[in-house]
Length: 379
Image 1: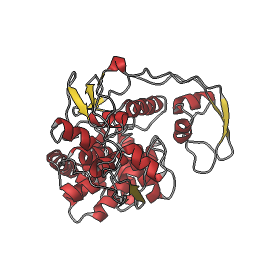
Image 2: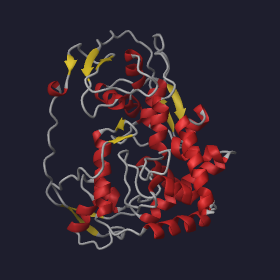
Image 3: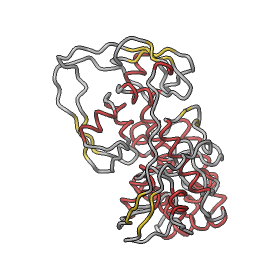
């Protein structure tokens, strides 16, 4: 976030938001049977941003590439982008949706299986795609024309509590990954297995997976910079916040020293790394944003996967050393990719792909200025 506020979000989240909302383009005229496109994943790309860019949907891209529900993609992978040109099939009717608390254009696109671009174009929204409570939106191709309101949407069923199960730790496992895989939290796993340090598990260790753990709520808000994040993202952020609150973490001074030493070890300017860490979180390892940006370096899980590829092992963003390493490796990649320091810093905030495509957004310019000012403080 521009200025010096901690826990502001990060890297790929802002890249996804910037790429998904900037430069809204009118929907192209329909044409018969066009071939699918191919896209090589760049740093900062997300499936939702690609869906907007190509006028497709997240579910269509996920299905075409065999992605799971998290829609995780990796730098360098070539994705199939299903053609969105009109076919002989009859066009679906539009629906009307009354905006409820917590709605975003991105979330509505997921719910109705249409693209963000289509909703923006159908409703004449600005490049920020801002919507207001009670606003009536046209959802193109969203089924019947009946008005969809919160009361008319089917209620979500609460998942049944799972009985405790056993899990054997495998190479590359982390407690946070095991928790996410089994629908529980790091804190619950640590309690169930009497783990003094959740970061220390060993291959072959048998863990008890608790069932029916109550989801953490209310620890992290759902809105940042006027954007309300999807409930599943906020829920994950709350779980990560709960895990960090239940775990002993280094002090801010210790985290600052860790950032500096890690930066030196990997050939990154320590002043730059410390400035970014302070800008992002104020050196607070327990910081978690509504976008599920985690820790001192405010790295989201998809960016953590990118950093894990660079590290050659799976990084645990809840682990202080791994969190700092993820941020430093991302900074190293950006400073090597861009000739200008401003663009490298902007890439951390806005995403490298978005910087290359659009240049620095106005908010990014402010962020860059703040980080460069802080660099003199940490020089």
